Image (cartoon, rainbow, N blue to C red):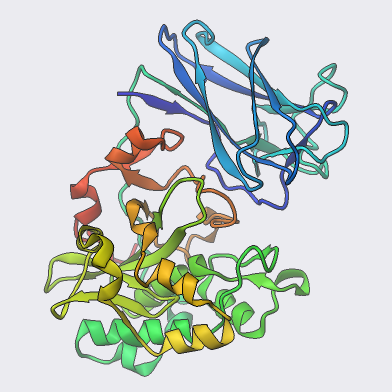
Length: 417
């Protein structure tokens, strides 16, 4: 058993982070219980491309071995903490680097905290403040720094949160849905109507092409994607995440139980994907749906769950059945064959690790949606991973579920609240 200690939810905006220099030194304070065992320090950081400067860290005033860059992208860094380094009560972790300019390391920060337990110094540690943070000195935030101790146990994963079916946002989205998705008939045909419509509604735009992240609001995503124009009149990021969110919200408007699934080859790797799952009463299982590439996986005519897809191993990609939306994506999103092979073709690397987004109320609770999921390594604290992932390096997350959790039917999804 072990327990994670953290003060943020990993809701970071990758373009509004904290810069570290020899003068800009940051401090994170975490209150911990007594411990006599080693622990683990996790932080989300991004070194500059081409920089080989180390990141310096101190724990309760003692400098520990520095960390070298892994990749020029936001990634999780894990540092073992020796027994005796930590103490009961407040523990102080500080980070800095050797460059005087902001060109060496960035640290993830979550804004929106009135009284954060994170601090910035701009004079090399002489004075500290927990306001006017971030590289533009405008944030009140918490740095994405977490500690896991052997003692204790994480809380059980949360129950799914569904949309309020009486909310006017669902009626508004309902008016946009294709008629076939609303007809009485086979659920698979209704789902296919939605994936074909969504996949054909806009071309994929990822974080390497744009910087303005679209919010998890289906009607806004559809509008921004169609016109390729978003906040501040800039090209918006509308990628696999946004197809999955739009699909889940459209399913709610059509009274179809659906949720969002995260899959990744590795925590810090590029082969991640965001999909949907639909509950089929007739099969008593969640079926994997890729609304970006208009894909559902079948074996002998039976749509597959995540467990079944993963069990297919290297043959899984051959089970993909594409709808008409894939032609739109190939043409208008300029998606290459390698991308399709990795996401829905022969490889399906993302099926190695599974995470569940435990909320589907994107329309009625927009304040609880993340501002940049998919633009960094996975970091949102409310993601639920499989129990086995804790032993495979996912200790920076607090929630882990067993097969019963992931495969449970959608209790209460159609109840008005």
